Image (cartoon, rainbow, N blue to C red; front, side):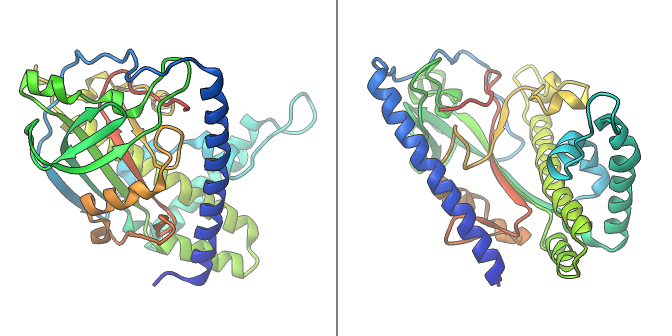
Length: 326
């Protein structure tokens, strides 16, 4: 049962999304009027090796141990972005680096230990899967089976850049014509991860008892743990996808954790609602493909995921796949 407060938050997020969408549409219309003709495809290479997935379809994992994904936690996004540890420049007051050592990391250790002890973090879960696909112009077409002539299961249409390289997310997948020529379709991954409802309930209890600092820290930590879990699961997918020479897509992963936050690996994880894939309505297709209710995640009428600390993604293996704005 989704609470009235969660519904209100979802409605507010949807309203912000709609405003952003309208602004983006007006900007695109203006750029389109000023720009020349838009090509059907960008210069993204089609001559790449397509990896083989370990299975077609979906799998779930419940009770993901904190130790598996805590190493993917972005400390800077947590301390600076979520907790507001700004620091001061010059000689007056502590620097950001000082605050990380005296407040950030000690509070982080405290909360991870406390939330683990209280059983709040034992609900982390993921559902993910691999699906055969091809590209058709601006569309990613998910097929019913790994055959270029197989019937269409779902179609995702993505916006194309009006300038620069004229990128479109569909460009990172093998075109249908090439799939027929090679006799091999492409593979797309989808994932949904969640920290579960208890961490949101825990934060709300802190808020209701006027423990505002604790509330902000737990809420912010929940957001970043969700991202860490999603990043960890993306690394799992890269490790499972096998290239023709027997190596994994993950062979290109950087060994420096800081590089992970700058996409220091092959491919990218695109979350819905951002520039490359702005249509939240596409979540309904991902929901049907993954059936995330098996890990307790539901999709609201406003196309928001519940519990709040959940996120989904389209996982792209193409070496040139990086974030871009349309």
